[in-house]
Length: 126
Image 1: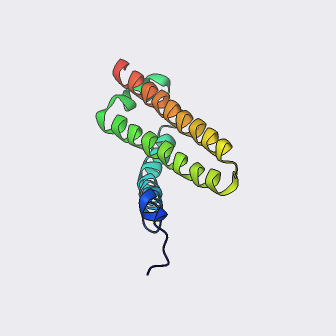
Image 2 (image 1 turned 60 degrees about the vertical axis):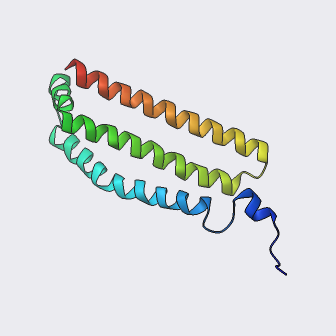
Image 3 (image 1 turned 90 degrees about the vertical axis):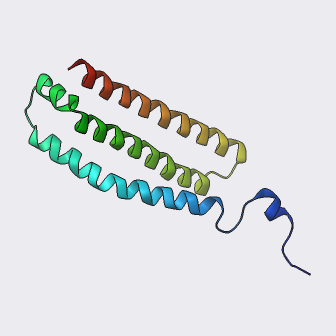
């Protein structure tokens, strides 16, 4: 006879199911953001005072454009994961929680796509 209820296995929740993946993804994006952010800060400092044309040429190089797109993707994914934890911890109504999570996910995707579009537009028109 087991003291566990059959509800846990049916829902697929519980220890080491969805929480572990979320935790790992937050750590992976944080680790990815370290070198990407250092590259971005170094690049901005080294181009201080540069004009738009010079920065457009810099961004048009495949290496810089790819790193910028990776920075955008990692930043917005990490942001969404972090805000999800805050919402799950501090919003108690289920309907409000779902609504706020939907807004966060849609806003993260929309902002990431807009930023990626801006990078690609500058990179391909320089």
